[in-house]
Length: 108
Length: 113
Image 1 (tube, rainbow over the protein chains, first blue to last red):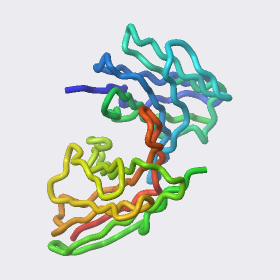
Image 2 (tube, chains in turn yellow, purple):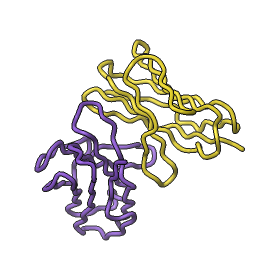
Image 3 (spheres, chains in turn purple, brown):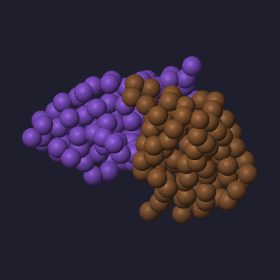
């Protein structure tokens, strides 16, 4: 059974801090990795994708991928209360597999 | 921007009814998907389609069928709704190349009473 695992949280960080969201995957054939943000009652929205080992930055967001360790993370710098949401990690080899999501709470 | 539109935001249906959930995308995407999302179970793939009139079963197809007569439209059909099909239903589309990201619609919250 191919799996993507995330800490369920909730992860609570103060406003302005760095939030670190982690994800591991079991399928070594996975080539593409996605981070989605989902506000309560809303649908997931894509915020980052990464295909190569290393870091990829987009504004306050940085995705990190380590294929040898089968590990992908999302860093959110200068966290804001509006970042409070559930973050879904997904890995794709042949099939797209979603993790269960990590709930992030940013406290003012 | 990609727009994926689901016809209803909320639906309430009775047990045994036939239910149609409609999804339309406006970006000429080849791939379309139907998921359901339940607390503690995450996103589960029901059906997907890589082309017009083509469909493939996902992880939980039982009790559902789909139709894709036009490239932009992908319909999910609950042949005889049951209470265990109460859920959030999410349609998504993606470009027809490997590893392209999914773009989700706003979701339909279906309640079967």
